[in-house]
Length: 94
Figure 1 (cartoon, rainbow, N blue to C red):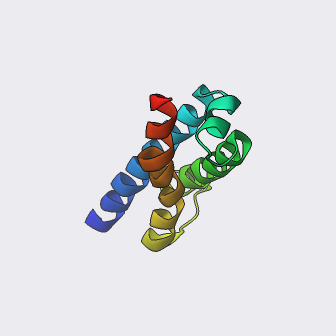
Figure 2: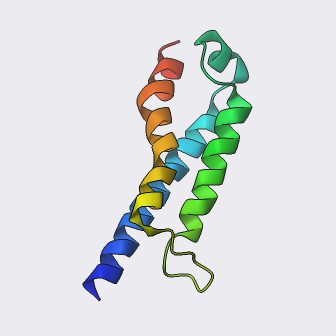
């Protein structure tokens, strides 16, 4: 039972991080991505949106949830981590 609730806590936390990254990627203009020599905005929005969708489906509280496992859950949050650590600071300073 504890394992289930820890899995829920990790999945919800990962999903929250993915949503923050996805919404932040939408808030910047396309020109800022190009000015900072980063990946195109459409690429980031598509990647982060897809990972947020998979993150939502990985929460084990839904009857339609998938069991991706902790390894794949961490792989799904990696693009959000890269965005938040590298791209977001560059977009904010320009």
